[in-house]
Length: 137
Image 1 (cartoon, rainbow, N blue to C red):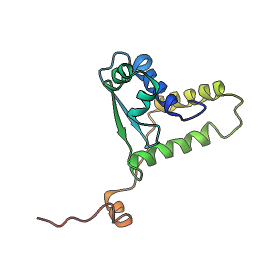
Image 2 (image 1 turned 180 degrees about the vertical axis):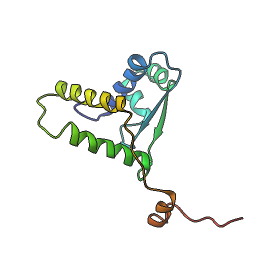
Image 3 (image 1 turned 120 degrees about the vertical axis):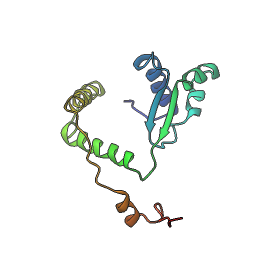
Image 4 (image 1 turned 180 degrees about the horizontal axis):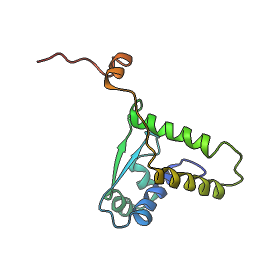
């Protein structure tokens, strides 16, 4: 959690993933949205080229489609977080971080999942321009 969403904030988070959270991982797969700061170039803006390249060699970015189930599931989880944890005034960023970490630990411990009900046939009927019907060969 940061106060802003700048390229430098993003780069610092990626550095923390590599050096603090997963220092022994050969490859770290990062799933994220398409925010303009979420780009390889952000690391080059924040660090010398050699350091940016060192970090990027360990990171593998995967971007969620704008209208896809991954993004919708993330938004569902954010909604649950808002209702269960954030529906009150929280005095400072430190308390917020502790509250969110406790909520997250509980969700993970309980093995909570999202039941995705939007099927391919739903997508074809509601979004025909994105899911065209293919004729049999």
